[in-house]
Image 1: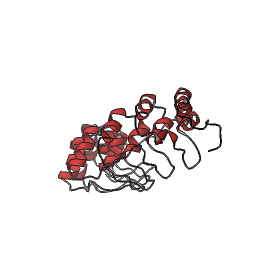
Image 2 (image 1 turned 60 degrees about the vertical axis):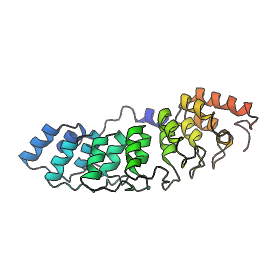
Image 3 (image 1 turned 45 degrees about the vertical axis):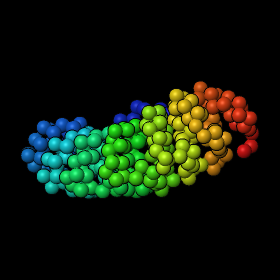
Image 4 (image 1 turned 90 degrees about the horizontal axis):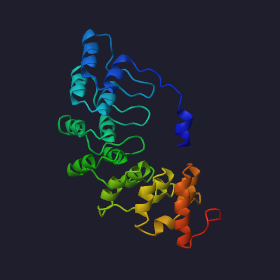
Length: 252
């Protein structure tokens, strides 16, 4: 939350016209630009994202098809995170684009970004249960662990998607208490994101989630306080005290 507040008031750099049209999902505008010529379908923004990434993120199959017909590479990854159009579409919950990429273009459902994050993990981050279910149905590993030892549960919990976390916990291959390289389980992520309803529900799960401190010795209540979510921190601190756990200010 603090980082978001610091970013407020900063104008985003203008995108090239073709990328802006694709970001807006404006197939008519993009077609006019492509027909007029003079626009590179492989042009990128400052993060190395191309028009087809933006089109996929906007959920326009028609626009993606128009770009491919114009010669756009559809397997290219952006330079910042190494995400493909399938990652972009999954993150925004655009099932039609995901289906088109996999069934028509034969994209690998397990394609990995730079940190090994897969499309289904980003779908979980967006809380898109139906998209996650589709990925599982076509062979994606919902229990896959990325470079940071995160599963789909960590992504959904950090974003505060209660329904998605509840669905994920019905899968026997996933563990809410699984810790990533930071030592964070689902409760740590929910606390750091300031998601009180999710924290309340998670306290009905494995007791060890509340008792676990991360690699820096931080409890869930401490992480909530660190992120500026005082109400969540107080709630979790009370829960920790009720279980007889050490005070947040005590040494781990």
